[in-house]
Image (cartoon, rainbow, N blue to C red; front, side, top):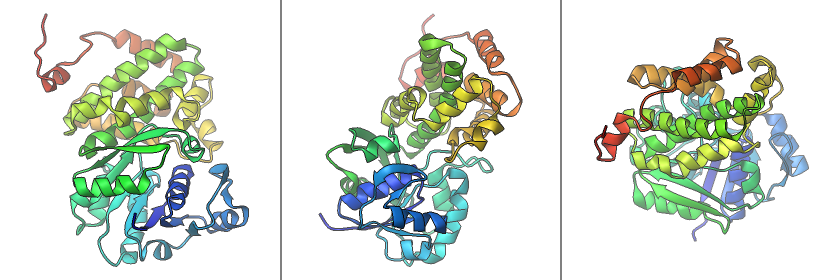
Length: 349
């Protein structure tokens, strides 16, 4: 396989993990880190002690705080920065890129101010870049487990099949597999909204409500994700795949999930500012809850779990009361009419 030059933008746990994976695949990888002091620490320690402690970094991995140095000769750009910071980072990258190159987003969120998805932010930042040259990587994948070579499967969305296969080959390892789709919208909606449902699942666990409640939240949460995704043009089948139900189950049940942890602490009685103050990494679901609520209103989609998560996070609603309100609002058909339509069935009463 031809050796590729890849720039990974963002040295959080996921960006560091993916840069390590690609470097071990013998690609020429540059990892851009915002904090110069962290670059020095990683070079000295041989690991990212802040975001991925205990995982050694390959010597061949080039770590830099200069976007110019990271991007200038890259054949492929991989973005792994918090969604709310994407636009600013991309704006700085424009002057560093001499020719249009494919961009892969590994970001899971929705920009709060504009309600746009990561792939849309990329296209707005690079107007000359064709939509078919943008890909999205998402799915059930805790960075620590990937770094430990635990078996992992994710989705890769790209409208250009040949480019998708090329990217698939770049990442494929004995323990890491990518499954292809063309549904960029569905993959991104699943990857973003599962974090909001994970906040609810963590809160339920913190309140001590057990497995019954969590199963209901996951199942009804998937319905809400599907309803919004379909309203935004996604394919329904996507939500039954890795970036849909797969990522949702992982994030709602795995204690490595930052969003589950935030919800759990709130369920125990802590406030959101108290929880976030003690976190080193970003819990994307907090800002995504704002975006999801706004999108549900924009598209006229009923999303009661999202609405109650928003109320707990930003309107001082007690977590226990939010659960009681969810139960009070629980009624109607299990499969909404719009989902029935997409699968070619009419409701029978």
